[in-house]
Length: 126
Image (cartoon, rainbow, N blue to C red; front, side, top):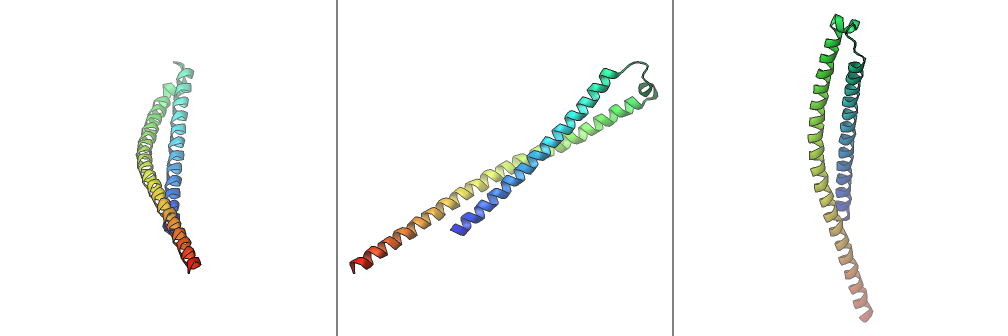
């Protein structure tokens, strides 16, 4: 049982690590989305009607690129959030299995100890 408890502990730790990695990915995606929003906001504040980039159409292409990039990042973030939800469910399950395995290992240890104590008492009475 102790080996099972160790194995369950390792599985739980792996599930925690996977969730942490996914959370870091989601955070990075949010940071990148915020940077795009900031760039767009800054550009909108700087815009003048006689702006050369605007007159050449580059500004329009840049806005399309920003929107395409935002869309791609949002899609990736949505997939990551779905993966996080699955990883949380897996972590809850592995954590429960770990607790159960640890409880069984502890009970087995106590039972073994009681048996040893009874044998010792019986040997003393003999």
